[in-house]
Length: 94
Image (cartoon, rainbow, N blue to C red; front, side, top):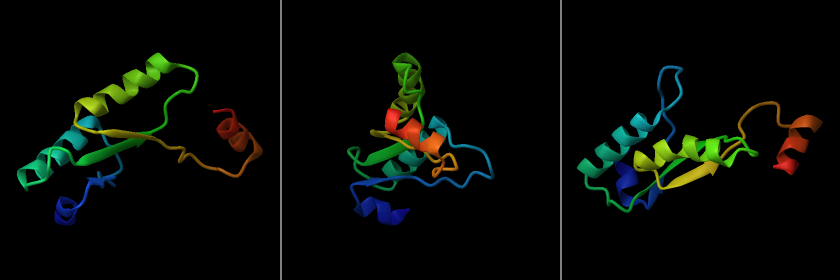
């Protein structure tokens, strides 16, 4: 993590014993980095999948991450399988 201090940002890969990361985990990460000298302008990226047809729910999902100090949201589609026609259609539609 100390190498991050020399960078502009980080895409955290949390090791949390099988549970999903939460905004509190991102806040803890940002607090640690700041305490070690990271700039307040350091980008911390959060990621996940929001519902395409429901902007209010999507905003509600992202807001806690922003509140925890995340500066970017990556809309990721990690669910498998990616190669099925149905999944590819969902991605094209989105």
